Image (cartoon, rainbow, N blue to C red; front, side):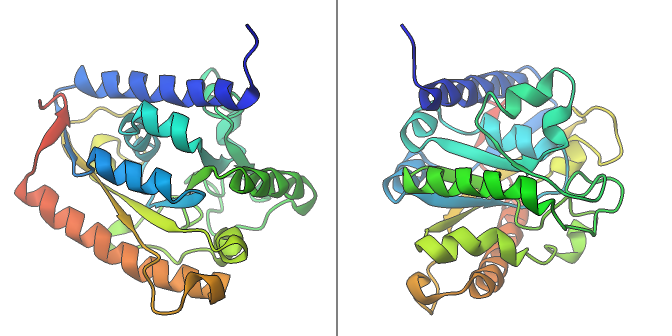
Length: 258
């Protein structure tokens, strides 16, 4: 029987989550600390539409975040990622994590921007091509879907110095629709997949935490995109720091360490 595009995309994301989790399980040299409870995902789904922010330091971030997504949450919240259009052009993997998974593209003008290569400081976009993607994102939000993206705009090459400034434009929809914002903090990705390495899988401890960020002094309904970017960066920096401390001390694990 024919299925809807939304269900097809949900199945693609869910399948990727299962496969990436299996990848972690067959690599016991990667120890996974997952602090997120099933109830946390349920709370996030219940308040959708929502946005999930991720800090970005390595290509491994995407695999780790996807691996720890419960398929039930994907089907309930219709989570979709926002990625550089250049990633969707990768051989074999690009279309699977791009078009087939319903991901939204960002058409950076500078070659390598958002991809950790080239002029990674130029976040200007091709406005004509981006308008269509922005319209798709807004339609997804109106259908009570969840968007996951990296608000730093690209790969942070100096994570020890803190998060890079959050791009204000990333929060335009959150300000427009008063969308709840959550943080998915990732730790240890650069050890698992060093930034300049062709492939990952190095011995490491990686971790994920999930927290709601928009419990802010000004109501979200009256906050501007700039207000949200600044407040979320401060809140997420504290979240990232807490996760780093927890990872150094150890916690319950998933993947190859169970």
